Length: 92
View 1: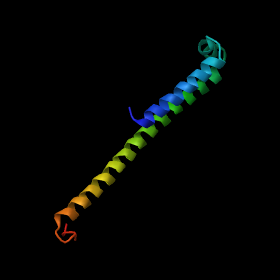
View 2: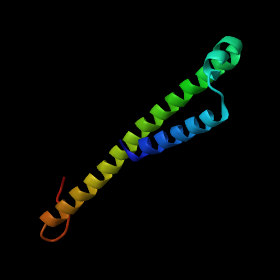
View 3: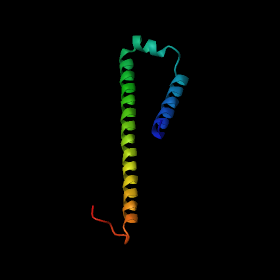
View 4: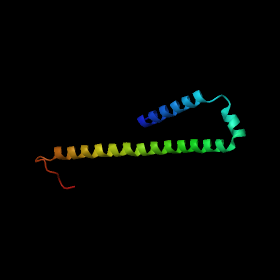
């Protein structure tokens, strides 16, 4: 699990703790029966939350790949300089 995933899990757990502390048992069942519009909005908000989380994780994976690529290219540059006796880059 990467750092971003840990952060997102922590935030979600805090949200669940706040919801649990501020609502009574059975709200989910009652809201589905008695408040269908609110329940639909809750379902939509939860789906959006899950979608945004997934997008962040995918973007973070891209970020990590870009970091790795940058580090690799600096290592290649260093190796190229070390291979040349005069410190000039050889033709690629």
